[in-house]
Image (cartoon, rainbow, N blue to C red; front, side):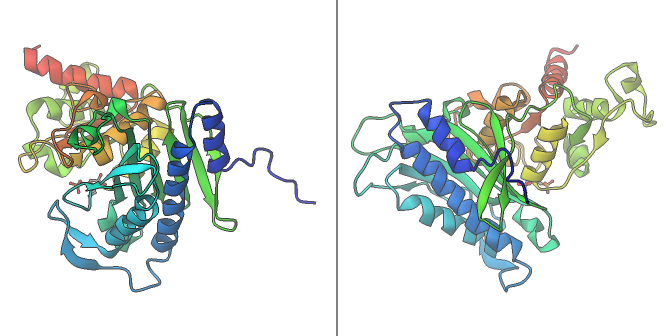
Length: 349
Ligand code: P6P
């Protein structure tokens, strides 16, 4: 007789258990996370059959970042808008795919939450069947006015009440934190449920992996070049060597070109993802609100850390929805070393 799995916990029961920790909770937050879970299942279905239906290829338009929109980008954005926009929990939505935030006048109910998301990060990889992902951050409104405003939207990452990502890879995984640890759930397509598979994820203090696009090396500032040199050769005196690497002194390089995939692997194994400023992208490429801040909350919940090279990503107050930041994220010890090298370069040490 097939034994029932011991800990058959769905994401919904996990969220409900969280809600029971807050007796005054109205259930709105639980409903919102469940809506995001529903949207993730729909997007997962489409991503996993993308090769089978005519959904590949560019939708033709360009998003606000000037990047060609892949049809699944569009699709993922529409799914989030439909799943979240019709419920009363949400008052503002911001998407990487939309120039402006959407302010929602709830037909009734509270409309207490702000959701900022990247519906399908890394989508340019879809045609090559590379893992892609959804990233989301949830904030609570601060104003008590009738109408919400930009002050409700533009909040620092440390104000998030929850954050998460879904990775559409060899399996679909939903990883989230609501401030009590980071937890991973793997989708069982046969029953359409996300089942608890990685409870209380903790990331190593130091990792063996660094993830960066080294093609941009010529345009990095000297301090960043030293960061990557130390990632390659180790942090001892050997880092003063020129190009010869001693096997094993430094880290190994892994770069998929899909943030959620690189971040997820480094979170589980230990390591650091780096997207430094370049000449073409002096503020960095990644968006603070829909990418860096949510992943920073996850990283911290797992014992890791995220920085823009000088400060905690979670402390940066966005000036606009699509604000970009340099991003160094992953194992706390590795990211702190990045900050130290950059600080020493500034002080001439
Ligand atoms: P580059 C995808 O476009 C993305 O936003 C991240 O998923 C990924 O890590 C990064 O950009 C890749 O950028 O400049 O190395 O191609």
